[in-house]
Image (cartoon, rainbow, N blue to C red; front, side):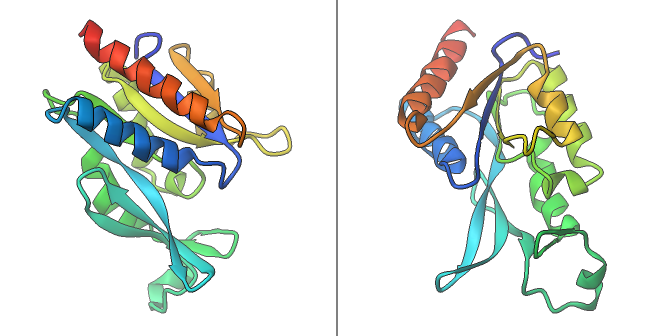
Length: 192
């Protein structure tokens, strides 16, 4: 089980800056220590003009794959699960994201943006996340905020993890929390 403080979760409403926090913290950590071994991924919007048409998963090393889209014309996409108007491409997500969640001896940090409804359609994803928690390697992940008092079961399990520290972002605290998350990770690495 992850030691206390080694599971850092960033929560907040959509668009509040969770992904931006992850990217900035990662940039700052790599500037401080270019040899830091980081594995994981983050998600980005896919836009056509002013319209969001999907999401892509991007590994920390730059590999990309589709997570969800409204524009997939393939016949099999009609059978894909949906979240709102988006069809989730589980195979594409698994091909890009799951190799990033494999534990290697020299890994210093795992980054997951995000553990959310779309990602949890992958039957292999959440077991991989739990495996990371058992590895005692620091994990920085984003999770959606509970809606209407209800949480996604996998997200609730992370939120209630005894070693988790949760930062709930809002427009007023996101810069402060970005510094706190960064400082927390720097302290963790200094102890190892």
